[in-house]
Length: 82
Image 1 (cartoon, helix red, strand yellow):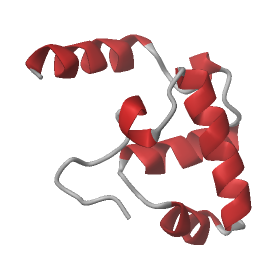
Image 2 (tube, rainbow, N blue to C red; image 1 turned 30 degrees about the horizontal axis):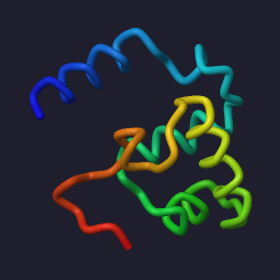
Image 3 (cartoon, rainbow, N blue to C red; image 1 turned 180 degrees about the horizontal axis):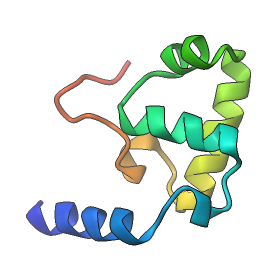
């Protein structure tokens, strides 16, 4: 587990949302994903439709090469998923 945490920190230290080719709006969504916010919370904060947030989340996961938020390291293990 410690090795995975270290790998994630290394990835984050050399990878920025901009270097992944994300748009400014996707970067805003990405920041909220890293705070383990739900799509509904993100759409309310950014005044977007939930479907638009889902499109951005899919693009972010694709850029990270991940299939889920958990795989991308965007989930909060202390917070149950809904």
